[in-house]
Amino acid sequence: MKLIILLTFLLPLKSLYAQESNCSDFRTGNFRYLDKKYSEITVTRTETSQTEIDKSRNITMTGTIKWLSDCEYELTYEKVMPKSSEFLVGITIHAKISEIDGKTFLCTAEAKGYTLKLGMEKLDTP
Image (cartoon, rainbow, N blue to C red; front, top):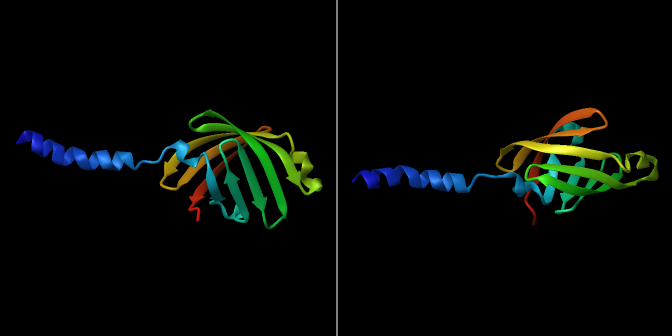
């Protein structure tokens, strides 16, 4: 009888744990920034690259991603259009995912002495 009662409480916990998101869920896909300042930027990420399109400023940035751990990566910009924004080429951003809540995550991004906390949401792909 005790075993049945114990299993009654443990089985639902197991299903909750199985649904928990982890950093690897955010390695690939389409994303948007949660901050309204960046709402016009869409992000498309593969295992090794990332493309950001800023519709409001007509800028496209493409870079390579190197995953350092499950929740930490470096993004190095390799191509930026238009040419007036090429100063971004070669900049490496070190990012670390710190919190996950369903389809959203918070990360800390550091580059050239600046630190920025960003939230992103993974979008459903059609």
